[in-house]
Image (cartoon, helix red, strand yellow):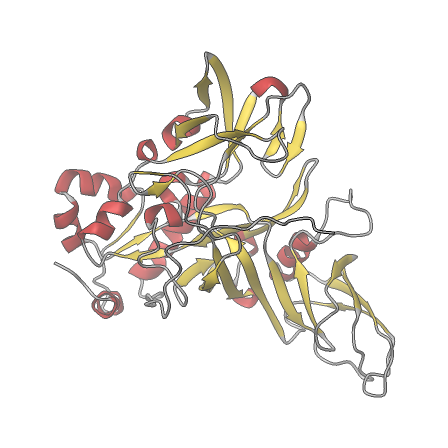
Amino acid sequence: MSKTYEQINERIRSGKAVVYTAEEVIDIVRKKGAEKAAEEVDVVTTGTFGAMCSSGAFVNFGHSSPPIRMTDIRLNGVEAYGGLAAVDTYIGATSLTEDPKGGYGGAHVIEDLIAGKKIHLHAWGPGTDCYVRKNIDTYITLDDINDAYLYNPRNCYQNYSVATNTSDRTIYTYMGKLLPKMKNCSYSSAGQLSPLLNDPHLDTIGMGTKIFFGGGEGYVTWPGTQYKTNVPEADGVPVAGARTLALIGDMRGMDAKYVRGLDITGYGISLAIGVGIPIPILNKDIMQRCAVSDDELFAEMVDYSQPIDRPPMARYSYAQLKSGKVEYEGKTIRTSAMSSMAGAKDVAATLKDWIEHKEFTLNQPVMTFPKERSLKKLEERS
């Protein structure tokens, strides 16, 4: 038996859709089998809530009187990009103030805007016949400006390496604080709730897929940067960083609960975002892939004290990682997560609630993403 997007959407609109989170559906498939479960279940919701550094927001401030072409822009002291049209900007999540140790950056500006807070805007321009003003110093809120939307070039990494440190000194990374001599390791995935682990080859996810994004509706726009497919798999699921997604969404519909600025000790600023992707159960194969559990999903541990060429040291299931410890060559290593499992559960449950209450329907992708792609390295050339 197979279903179509329209059939599923009609069930959503009539309030008859059967929706489960990716955690809830595991036992259903184990008890009933994928074929029977696929007949009963219409949508499976997924969720992730973790650091997504490759994120940022496009903002249009509107024109002042007299007008200015902004070429040097600061929002709460954080540098924003001045190379667009007169009053457009892009502020990256990892952009900093003049004090890089200040613990505040572009991610916090984005969170504060969504939270409705006042933001200090100070901008300069060259002064031209069209745009005579050279300086503006004012305050804005999300309600004051014309446009504000997240456009994130790389989110929802499909799996990621487990990070450890074999050196004799503590190192500070985007995977957190790594103690010397492998005293700890960290991972960054929601495991069995993670969107791209439940649809590992993106059979239902593509350009135009509608998603839960930062507490509002968003869309998948393109393959994310660093998207690749040539990684090892276990039972059809990548065991290392592979596919990614580029995402877009209107900040006015978002909730600061799901968009949080981070200051990662010794590394810098990042942005934690809640993302949930609904997976339509079109057939039993999709149903079976959505029933994957933490003990069937794996990630490879690598040594982050090595700057390049980090070969895998070991492979662990997410059940092992979430237990709080793993074993490596007779050594017990403490584990910790860089993403929030509580946040991922909240995202998946909220998206489920939206669908059950007829507030969210599904979009069929207008374009699928590459089945084969590898990454290039940056070469130094004279």
